[in-house]
Structures are given as structure tokens and as C-alpha cells.
Image (tube, rainbow, N blue to C red; front, side, top):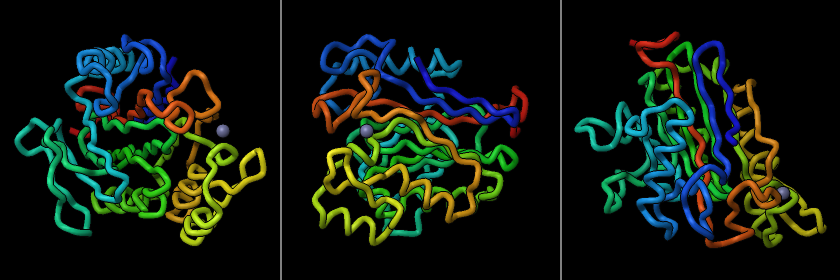
Length: 269
Ligand SMILES: [Zn+2]
């Protein structure tokens, strides 16, 4: 089962759950994360299964080496393509790449129709953005550190630099740990709320918490993005989703965003 939304303007948003793959316990079944201890062959198969179920070419899905930062990469093809990536973040020079050659970024932006951007999570907030008029899409990984660092505003800034307009952007956030489940020390809650007040929360058992989803939506609203939607699922409460806080050793869910390609309606070629 996959949460999916397709707009008439040719934008596509999808979030996986844990079913429909080949991984064994504790990654059963559809683990899409390559750095969590699962069998790499199973992950490869799962990525192919997920892409095919979405009507995507597995070779046209771009993944990230996520590090809880705010760096953004603009891509126009998979990483193995010669000219695939050019870091655009105004922050520090690009950090050393992972052994895989995939640079450490927490957001991707593309102007290429048909190219899918993917984000991995298991409690963090997967954020998918698209301006179909400009033909710009973005996927971002926003956990608590990313919320504070501003990875979502950085992704939107990179989209705008390529011609997107916030008033035209559709934003969707996927399954993530909810504010009633994400317990933190009181001082940490204060630190996060000092940056994003809307993230201040309390657990269902009455202790300090952070609502990262609410914080991300507040950041999106402040940027002028009104068309926002969110998944109803809390990963920690849902047995159909991976949750790091609940299970520690577990798989990763994926969010995918793409725009119609050159040979489809709304193509950008
Ligand atoms: Zn919850």
C-alpha cells in the first residue's frame, strides 16, 4: 500500500509503507534504506519493486546521502551521470562525499521532468514539493536537526532560484512521528521552539515533545506555500510503517516526487 497523489498539472507525490518488499525481519518488508544493515540485494530489489509500482524507471530515481543538514543539490539525472550534480547551497563548500560518491545533502531539486527524487525516513519528516508550472520538484529530509537548520526553506530557496513561485508550489509531508509521540528533554524542546515556535508540543503522556511536522508546515506557510497536505500516519503508532524511535533497528520508508516527463502531459522538454 502506497499513499499517492497525482495532480492534473502533472505532479506526483508518493509515500511508501513497510509492505510489499522482500527484506527479512527486522527490515520486513519494503526497506528502501541502504545504510541500515539490511541485505543490499534485498534493498535493490525493493527499490525496483517500489519504482515499478509507481510506474517509474528504477534508474531514474535519485537518492540522497542524508546527514541531517541543510545542503541542497540540484540534479538533472542519476548520480552516475557525468554532470548529474552541482551543489547550490550558499553555505560552506561541499563536504567530502560518501564512499558511494553521493554527496551529503538533505534536499534535492530538479527541473527535469520524469526524474524522481527520493527521500528516506523512519520518523523524520519526508517533504515533497512541486511547482508544475515552472517544472521544478524537490524532496527534502527534515528531522528535528533539519527543522532547526532550515533544510526546507533552503530547498524552497533553491526551487525559487530556478523559477518556481511559492504561491504555485504544492507541498506534501509523509508519515512521520507525531508531536504526541516525540518525547524530548524540556531544554531541547525549548531550543527547537526558540527557532520554530509551532514545533512546541507535549506527549500524550504529558511530557515535553517536539512536533516536527507542525514545524515544517509553519516554515512552508511562512514562505507563502498555501497548498500543503500531510499524511495521517504517525510512524511510531502505525504498525504499517518503520519507526526508528519505536524499533531502533528497522527499515526506511521513502517519499517520491516527480513531474511528467517530456513524453507525458505537462512535459518540460
Ligand atoms: Zn504518534
